[in-house]
Structure formats: structure tokens, C-alpha cells
Image (cartoon, rainbow, N blue to C red; front, side, top):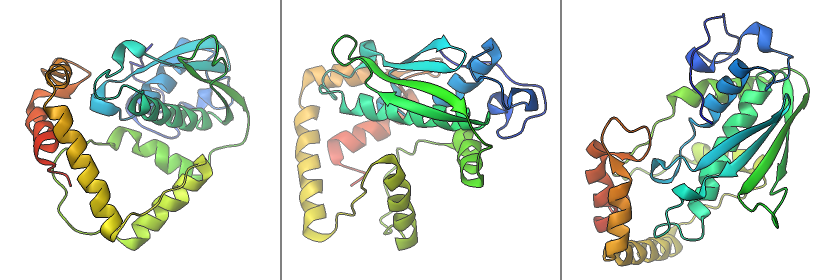
Length: 241
């Protein structure tokens, strides 16, 4: 399931296909086809490894949505353990949670609800009645259509300390710890990354996998052809490090 379409009714947060009409605030988020499209549209705007978009959504009822990993989109050579796939689906889940908040509900997430029977079922999300979103949630939601992927080399300037502290603070409520690696430890990490990428680049199966996920502008997934050169430079030269 993917999100398409636009909302012509005056919106509260968001814009275009992300706009939340006043009539949707307070109603069960997945009660209508339009509501499902709007929320899923926001979810699938998340970034993903090589833009594989490795997720599927299933409406359970008016207030519940399941998030599945689309294992057909797993990068078997690049990401054999599915770590990148999991992070990608986590980003989509975060966007879905934000979209639910815009309707005046609180998302209750049950991770891995059936690990024995359906390991590809990553989360069940239920929308419970709640208050309006706060300012930070609205700002985050409004930024969804403005997210961009930058495949160019970094410019070498250090990350401002206040930005890093903001990132650390943002990670904490998500149950994550963000650690700044500096000095010799950072160099060691970069050396390991360079060795790993060099090893991968020598594998024909890896090059074939990368080629499968490099497409024309007509594709809505994968790495666009115009960006492929930057991806290859990153792999072969460690251009971003």
C-alpha cells in the first residue's frame, strides 16, 4: 500500500497530500480511504537504504495499521542482516506516528508483535484518543515533504556543537543513544568503513545488486541514474568520509 492523491480541503498541519483537513481531526485515522492514503503517503516519504522503500502497510481496522518489512526489497549483499532495512522501516514508522498525531491521536506502537510466526511484521500501530500535537510535532510533520537525500561529499566543516546536542536530545525519547566519535576512534571507524566498502566493491554480486537499484527517472524507487556516479564514488573512494 502506498499513499497517493491530494487533499483540497483547507489543511491544519502539512501541505498538499500531507495536509490534514479539519474534518479529519478527531476521527479515527484509518476510517476512510482518504485518511489511509494521507497517513501512508507521509510514512513512505521517509528515507531508505538505496531508496529501496522496503515497507508494506496493512490496515487492520479504523484505528490500527500493521507495518511489514518487504523482504523482496532486502539488499541481500549490501544488507544481509537487514539492519538497513530495519532502520528504513523505522523512519517510515516515525513519519506514520507523526501523521497520526496530526489527527489528535496518540500512536501506541507494539514492536515485533509476532516474532515466531511473522518476523516480517515489524510493528502494529494503534491510534488512541489524545490531545492536539505540540509545536515540535507540527514542525516535524511540516518538514516531511522537504526532506532531501544528499549524496555529495561532506564539506569538511565540523558539526556545530549545538546541532549535535539537539540530535542527542532527539534520540533519547526514541530509546536510542547518539554518541559522538572523535579523534583516533573516529579514524578507526572510518578505516573499517573504507575496508568494508572496498571489499564489497570487489564483489560482482554487489555491483550487480547496485545496478539493479539504479534506474531511470521513471522509477519511484532506487537510486536515480544522475546520482549513481556519486554513489559509486562513495563506494570506491570513500568520498563522504
